[in-house]
Structures are given as C-alpha cells and as structure tokens.
Image 1 (cartoon, helix red, strand yellow):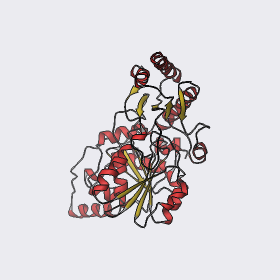
Image 2: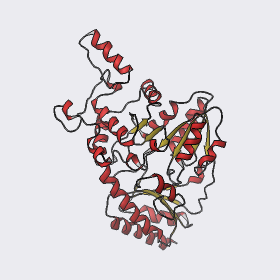
Image 3: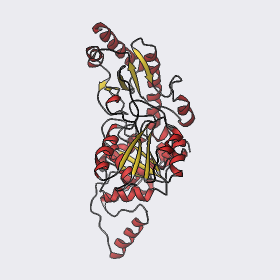
Image 4: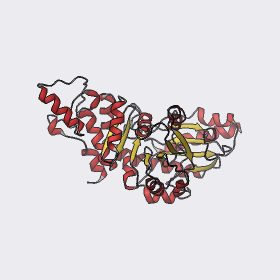
Length: 391
C-alpha cells in the first residue's frame, strides 16, 4: 500500500470495536481478571511483547491504534507513545546510556534536547559532545570507546543544515553506537529513517501528527533489535500519554498526507517570494536548489514541510520589532506543525558550541500554515513596509 493509504487504514481494527471506525477512547487504570490463570497468562503475554491489556499505563486499544500506525508508516518494528516530544527525545537517549557513557549530538539539535543533555545527562555522569552537523563520515574521529549514542536531526532545528545520515550511521554502527534521529520536520511521510541506517526515530507528534496545535505528544519508533530497551525505559519511568490526547493524535494522523502536501506547497511559494525580497539575506529551506544541503534533501527525502528560516539583512531591533509585532496572520509563538502560520526570532549564536553561528543577519523561523499563501505574502509584505519605515 502507498503511504497515503496506510495513513487511513494502519492501526485500525473496527472488527474489534463493534465496527467503530476510530478506536474508542479507553479511560483505564485498573483492569480486572476473572481468574488467577487469566491474570498470569496475560502478564506472561505482556512480557513476551504482545499487546494485551494488563494495566492502563501499559497500553490500551486506544494507544495501540496510534502506535501501530506510526510504526507502520515510519517503517519501524514498534512504537511507544510519550506525553511530549521532549519526553520522547530524552527517553530515547536514556534507554541506551548509563554513568560513564558518552553521546554525540548534532550542534543544530532541538534546544530542549540540548538542555536535557547539558543538565540531566551531565548530572548522571553521561558526557555529551556536540558536533558539526555537516561532519558526515568524519564523525568517526569523535567516537570514543564509550560512545553509546549518536543523535542526529536533519534538517537542523532553526538553522536547517542537512546531515548525511547514512554516512553518520555507518560510522556509528562500526563503533557499536546506536543512531537516534529526531524526524519531526519531515514526519514519517517524507523521511524513512530506517531505510537510511537509523536505529531509533523520535518525533514531536505535537507537530504534524496532531496538526491542530492542541495536543502534546511524542513518539519513539525503533527497530526490532532496539525496541526492548525503549519499551523497558518507558515502562520503568512510568511514561504514558492520556487517552484523549492519544485519540486526537490518531485522528490527526489520518489527514497527515493532505495537510503536509499543502504545507509544503504553501511553504515553497512563500519561501520563493522571500528569496526575492531586498530585505532578506538568505532563505534556509533545504528543498530549494540554492540551499547547500539540497542534494542531500533530494537524495534522501520524499518531500518537505512548512517549516524553514530566513536571515534578514542586518538591522536594528526597532525595525525588527516593527516587522514582527503587527503581523495579522503569523502568530508569534513556539512550536509549529498546526494549521496556522507562526513566526519567531532566534539567535543560534547564543547556544552553538561546536560550530560558530554569525547572527549579524537576524534569523527568523517561519511555519507556513494552511492559509492562502497569497494572504501570507501580503501580511509579510506589510511587515516589510513597517520595517523600512523605521529604517
């Protein structure tokens, strides 16, 4: 089946739910057993990895519907749902490290993942080294005897560098390290991590899977070899997501294909317009031919999302504020992936350590939603007029 079809049918089992199309919401903690034999048998099956109801935290048909669908679309063995994208990132790493271990993390990583490494992992005796996202196979020079995890994110958060994932994965596997990827930008629809050497894929389902800016959700999908470590870590940490949130996420997943196509189309149209603006220094969108990582995007990715950044030509803060403060259609807020357009200012030079980021030309990240791109362009054009009036 094509991915568009899988998005509609994967994880559903109407025959097990009185013919109901979407898996019902199971609000459950306690589960009752009729006999001692049944209690022991179900727990035995659970220990063998089967999806059986034993206790609410261990999963219900509601959670399995989403988990099975995500795993199938992403191409992994199994999936575990988490209450946020950061929880998924953190526990994906935590599942494979202990005191005295070392992890390699791309310098362009999602900010909260960096904060987790710098604070929690450090406190528990795990060393983190940040590396140039463009390092490719050269990462082998940074791998130590105690390197357990290589964490990749492509394109990079805010700065959109493209990583050579197969080359990095090859070097990591030769050293016995696990490759974990944050696959949120492309979603499981436009990047197939397990076809490129990734062992564990994490997503902030809050973004494109949910698609409506109203649910926090994270997913971890793993290969069969690495799945037991993920499941054990989640269970021991008591990680679970509420059934209503899971239900909304699985409902959002069903329309991912049509939404993401529109996000991509709208995003490219706005990006092309921005590329021609005199106020714009550069457009950081890997699906555009001028982008330094375009060849990698074209080789490995099946599409693009609506998220990209621009760098404005150097200007003073009052001019930047005049541009951003009064936009009508672009909300100024964090996160992305919903139906609405968003804009934020970011300064990568304030956190990059392995590479230097020149913030002379201010970086603006945009998420292009499902509005008419012509209306979005008009909104940005009005913002540039305000900016130029201040200049």
